[in-house]
Image 1 (cartoon, rainbow, N blue to C red):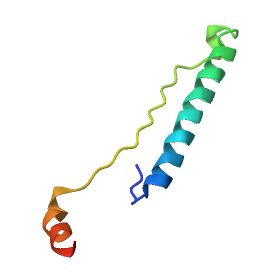
Image 2 (image 1 turned 45 degrees about the vertical axis):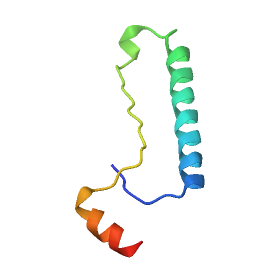
Image 3 (image 1 turned 90 degrees about the vertical axis):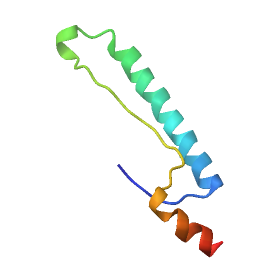
Length: 65
């Protein structure tokens, strides 16, 4: 898990890169389908990025804007 504060532009870049990684994962999966089952291992890849703000900071955020 990583946390940070990203601009809209940086978030778009991150989303594009996550999408590309998902495509590459799918391509590897498709290539490896030709291998015997004994040579493959079940693998799950979880990718997610979304805006999130802790409610504890709402009062601080409102007073600084």
